[in-house]
Length: 257
Image 1 (cartoon, helix red, strand yellow):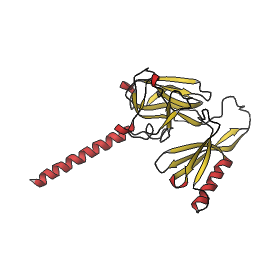
Image 2 (image 1 turned 180 degrees about the vertical axis):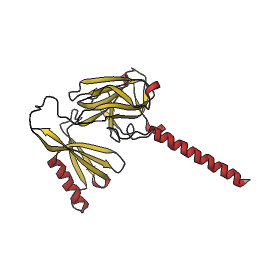
Image 3 (image 1 turned 90 degrees about the horizontal axis):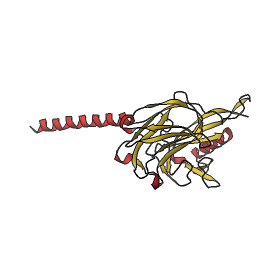
Image 4 (image 1 turned 45 degrees about the vertical axis):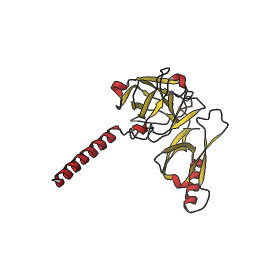
């Protein structure tokens, strides 16, 4: 009799594990432009006071994986991510939230390109195809427009089948391109990704530091000057620690002279 009871309990445990595994996978976001990126939360996309939020892009949906967007009157009603470089080709997004909100795309001058009114009751955890392709996007934001009512957000990401990184609108298309810049993406040991838009010289300097440190020579940290989200500060410096780096990759692109 005891063997039958234990067998039944084991069977139930396996079924529950499979169900939970399926649920987790069905909610996990991957392959998007915001995957594992750190977002900000504040009163506006130009706010100099903000919180860093990582669980909106970490693929988790448990109780501790959400962060709230407050009502407008409580100054934390906007969540946003600013790309190191303008992005073109965004055609869809996916969002898990428990209330309606706006998904807003901004250009490099922080002017609104497009606003999508998201309805959580019918669109939560679905890939939403945008009515038009979003080009020259510098910042993407999720905004709670309610004065006092807060909401919870679990996951957010944007996607594009043909993503490109064009130059700032207004550059002369007739000039000769040269591959002298790159996007350096560093994956940290905790899974967080950091992106930097650098010259090839700056990329080579980072690789040189990494190689030397791997051989046991040089400082334990490397400094990057952040030229985005500077707010009121004259200079912002971000440091990465050598033994926290898991991998990094370099994607070169062409710029106009």
